[in-house]
Image 1 (cartoon, rainbow, N blue to C red):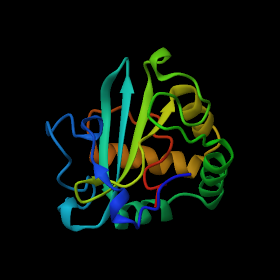
Image 2: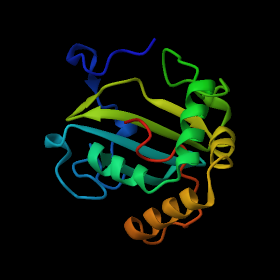
Image 3: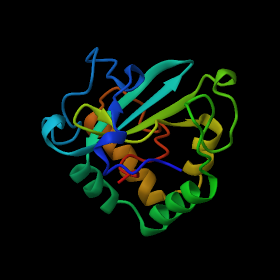
Image 4: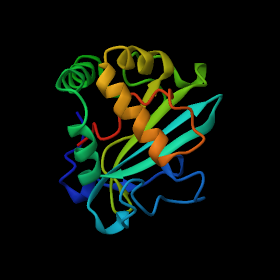
Length: 173
C-alpha cells in the first residue's frame, strides 16, 4: 500500500534521479507556467530515458497538470485511469517496471515519474518500461496524442513531436 501523500511524515527528499538533467539539480520551476515549484504545492516530475540517457524531462505543477488534462479526451483519461488501476504493481523500490514487473536492469528505455511537494517526494517513484508505455499510448485517442504533441512542440523545441509521453503528464493528480 502506498503512503498517504497528505501525511508530511511520509515525504522523502526528491532523489537525484528526479533532479533536472538540464538544471543540474532539483527542478525549480513549472515547465508550463514557470512559477516557483517550491511555493506551488503539488507537482509531477516526468523523465524519459532512451539508452539510459535523459531525452525529455518536465516538472508540472498541479494546476497546469489539471489544465492539460482538461484538453485530453474523456476516453483517454478513462483509459489512463483504467491502465493504472488494473496494471500498477507496487514494489518497495524502483527496481522493476511498476506495470509488468520486468526487472529494470534488463531495459534501457523507460519513464520515471514522481509526485512531489516543495523539495519532497510524496510517493515512491514510478517506473514504466518502454513496452508498457507503448501499450498505454496505444489506448489514447487521436485528440490526446495531438495534445501531447502540441505540449512537446510548445515547450520543448527540438524534441520529436511523436515522443511517447505515456503516462501522460498530469495523471498523478
